[in-house]
Image 1 (cartoon, rainbow, N blue to C red):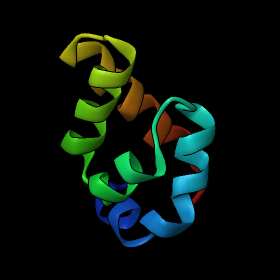
Image 2: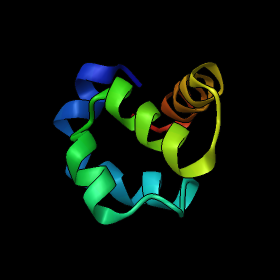
Image 3: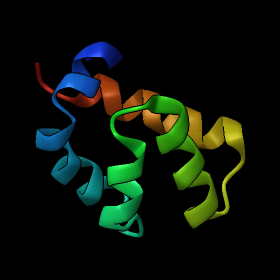
Length: 67
């Protein structure tokens, strides 16, 4: 799914993100507000991943979302 669409539908997609990354808090997801770089940064912090790993996970997740 395109990130412009993800941003627009962020409130609906937060549940899917929470399922994928259970260690993210609701506050983390609210602050991300559908912004790819902020979401990747939060994943990086919570899971101790590299920037590249977090970005790759976010990209894979975005491709798996049904339009």
